[in-house]
Image (cartoon, rainbow, N blue to C red):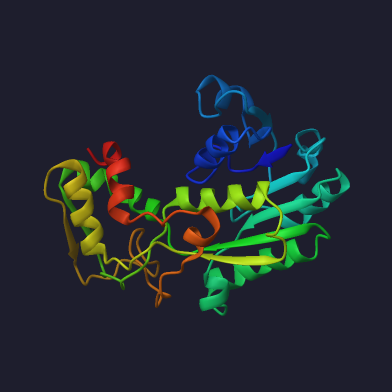
Length: 265
């Protein structure tokens, strides 16, 4: 039995579908199991179970009989408590999502947070695999309202070129690590196949929806946070991990945009 946390999100949905296609028994963790099951976000025959990563005391029933755990952090989770609950329940393996910032920018706030979560995984006593994805292609969903209403995305900076990764590729690698031997003790850096700028992303979204979408770097700072869809870190070179582990090429941002075009229409 595999327990997938974050089962209704951008990684969890394709991961659950992939595991089901391969015949793996799956439980999908959600805060509201009845709502998830009724809304179709947890496909049959996966079983929706309730639990909260911020409150590990809610997890024993969901973990009962589970052999392998997919752990997707929320940013507020009690990772050490979740992993203790998993170990107490007899879980043997964990595949955990971290961030490539743990390797490329370990002194940044996000890099430090990623390393903190990784330390909890390594100290858990479970066999482990750590996935380190770069910037998600799905971050640009934050642009959807502006694209739908104005066809222009404005941000204070254009950021830097970034090999954004499709969450479905993260799911594909996770599925291999969850169901195959030989992935224990490995760190997997995950990126897309090419570096793209915010201008490239806007153009690809426009091509996907059939109308022009512009990106406007205004130069006007509106706070200290980098806007979604704009990478503020020096980016790594594209990695070959998706091809090597999942057995197929990583998907381009343009492919992701075509698949999610309805969100921008």
